[in-house]
Every structure is written in C-alpha cells, then in structure tokens.
Length: 162
Image (cartoon, rainbow, N blue to C red; front, side, top):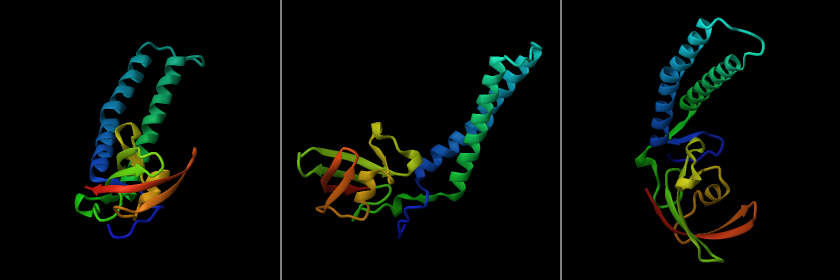
C-alpha cells in the first residue's frame, strides 16, 4: 500500500478472512436456522397480529439479510492490507504501535486495523480512531498531538512493527 486514503475502507487480511467467515455462517447456518424456525412456527398454524414469536423471527431475518448485504459491500469495496504492505518505518494500517504519553509516561501498545476489525479490548484500534488516525504516517521518535474527547494529549512513538 503506497498511499493512505482516509475515505477508503481498509481491512487486514485477517479481518477480510473473518468477514468472509461471518458471511458464510450467515448465509448457511443463520438462514437455515431462521427458515427452520419459520417452518416450525407455521406448523403450529397460529399467525396473528400479536404474534411476538413471529415478529421476533422477522426481525432476526431482517438483521441477517441486512448484515449479509453490509458484509458483501465491505468485501467488494475494501482495500486489503497484506503483510508485505504493512510499513515498519512509519505508522500505517496493520502496524503494531507502541506509544508513550509524554505527560504521564504511560505506555500503550495496539494494532491499527480496519474499522470493522476494531476491538479496543484486544488492543485493535480502527485507523479512524483519534489516536490511530493522528499517528498514521509518523515514525519512531516522533511526537504527535492528539485531540481526544477528554482533552488534548501528546504521544511519542516508541516502536512500530508488523
């Protein structure tokens, strides 16, 4: 990847495979589960305006179908960041980054990933997150100011790796 474009959808190969897996599960397992539930409900022969179980099934089906469409759109338009494309001389999508808060000395390490892969509890930040987007393009030793909801912060980049 030579040029980062903020409006583009980026996925690591791992994130791409995860979405493909979710798509297969939704198209097979979840569609089948919902179809079976509809059949079972129909066998009981009770369809009424106040049928909460039927409404729940319809909601499940609508969610599954909309998620399938959403994943298809992401997979079709995403730019895949392959391991060989992940930079180590500057911060980019796919990079593992270790930073230090200049004011407190607190250190953090995380991976910058696509928005659909973000999982802060597992140290995966979306490239659209304030800290990640501020760091993109900078190098080890650089200090970067970041505008955060709780106020501005300044970080020093300590390490960048694949």
